[in-house]
Amino acid sequence: MEINIPAVLAEVQEASDRYEHALVTNDVEVLDALFWNSPHTLRYGVGENLYGYADIQAFRAARPATGLARTVLRTSITTYGRDFATVNLEFQRIGTPNPGRQSQTWMRTSDGWKVVSAHVSLLKTNPV
Image (cartoon, rainbow, N blue to C red):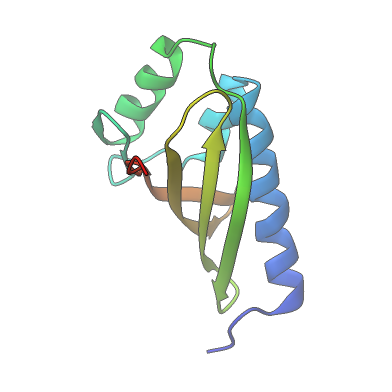
């Protein structure tokens, strides 16, 4: 299996960038389109566990559209062959002290790259 084929890496980077832009602008239509429409898709969020595309879609529709701005601090993308990839990033929400982490598993489908599993968590900062 080839790791990080340049053309595949570029495709996943583009999909990840599209996701990030949709996330901070609350473009729910694009966010929904980038998740695999399957009962097998899951997303563990900071305060919710979502099982299946329908749960994820309902969460996105109900989520407040404020406080979404963030700065990506670090991104790591690894592709495995031509149809599977992981995207991990660290972020800092604007105006909050705790940095966050986001992990996504992406799969190539007949409709393009889709997130099949996602996890978001926040780190607690220790006062000095």
